[in-house]
Amino acid sequence: MGKAQLYSLYNGFLDCLCLCLSRSRYEAPADSERDSPSGHLIYKVGDVLGDRYEIVDTLGEGTFGKVVQCIDNGRGGAQIALKIIKNLEKYSEAAKLEITVLEKISEKDPQNKHNCVQMLDWFNFYGHVCISFELLSLSTFDFMKSNNFLPYPIKQIRHMAQQICNAVRFLHDNKLTHTDLKPENILFVNSDFSLIYNIEKKCNERRINDTTVRLVDFGSATFDHEHHSVIISTRHYRAPEVILELGWSHPCDVWSMGCILFEYYKGFTLFQTHDNREHLAMMEMINGAIPLRMIYRSRKQRYFHNGRLDWSEHTKAGRHVKSKCKPLRKNLLSQAREHHQLFDLLEMMLDYEPLKRISFISALQHPFFHPLVHPGRNQIWRNSCDMSR
Image (tube, rainbow, N blue to C red; front, side, top):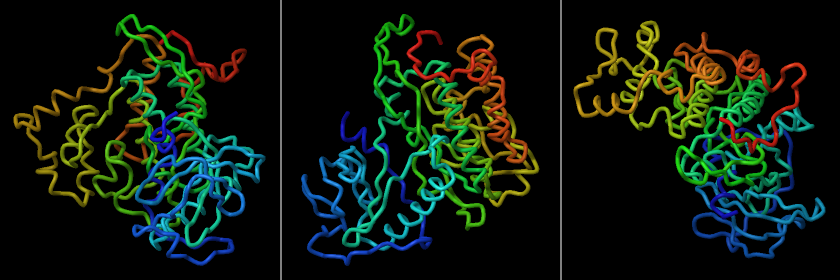
């Protein structure tokens, strides 16, 4: 597995601001001789951090710091991923916020039944907050990318979706909104695959052997009682209430989930745009008109005129959206019942109105998931190297 692939497991955790930790740890003093000018810890392979973590390799680097692979001598030599935060206040405080969320997850799910990545430990090393995690594998995005963006088989989508819904339902039950659900933040525990010849595409296709996943990146997760930032989520998975600045809560995660499942099913992003007005136009092309009550309450009135989106299909941008987007059901790849069940679920997840959008508790009861828990066939789909779609 490449360094960039492993690094994708933990990239982007740190976009939020500070919250004090509920417990204290010994904090070693900062040491300018150990830090690069940009705040990174200076280290080499073989160094031992915290009298425990022996650095094996660098997995990646981000704005927050670096991720290294370590031997954890406190866990019998287990391989772990260690995130080393820059020795800069804004990143240290953001890391403390993430730790608070991860501690809450560990407290509420000690048996790791809810498919969230497990923080193993954290400590302060000469001014650098360090967080250790279980070592996972490729993200669902990176695997799809390595597979030439071929979509996942529907049976695999079903098992992955069930686990992710379970993970985010667990967060919502504990008064947390993830706010940054996307394929990059859903990781396979093991990304070993088999090569299957795809007759339709006339090429070999990678088929993941085990679709067990973990949800990661809690750096932007927000408790219900905390301040809610105006803008959240990576653009392509951003809910309409966020774009329209109507306020947001748990349902924004449901919208993101709908976008993710579509991407797994088709192999491309549902809303491929970087502009708010164009994003809304794509939504209308796929989902129909935005409800008037949402338009009238929006703080973004400049996007509308006389209660309608200010958008023309006859412009270059308009023609582009029309060529790229079509009503949701027209993306069906098969008329088989399970495909229609998936799209029925997608329509409920992609309801414009947050209060009408399906919850994860209800989603898990949807007929699409019945094959996973059907009486007499209640063994959860694990080894999913199945050729049927």
